[in-house]
Image (cartoon, rainbow, N blue to C red; front, side, top):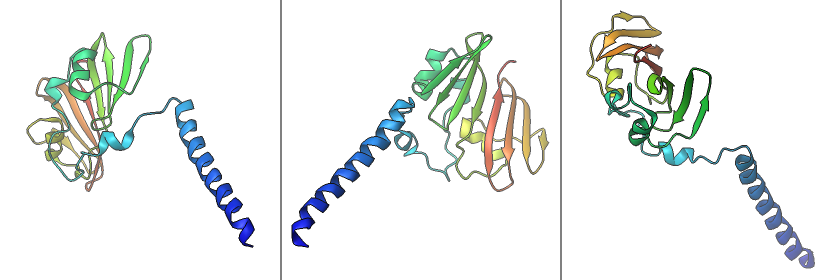
Length: 165
């Protein structure tokens, strides 16, 4: 029994090493080498502190948005727009005519669906123009065309911000 112990340990170590190598390789081959844990390690889900200030992003070109949100981890272009995804707040920005025009923020932590949610994008809380248990809408808020929040009364799921179009 003893003479098989060392080979068994070697085989076990080799199997674990192969599994770790293979799992890391699969993510890289899919083009997904982004460090998700590092991107969100400082995000306090209970905080009402701004993820970013919308005034520093709305209507800005891609280079200025990257200066605020960091480099995008994925971008794709279409005929009339370019869509980029950024880590802070799992933010997606659609650039129309080269400017940040539609924004979606999905990592809002455990914030409830209420007027205080505006603080997560650096705006002062004001009563919504339209409010229900699943949605809040602020038209013409802070120079923006519209801000919409979706979720449940206990937890906001995402913000959708329209800047110009």
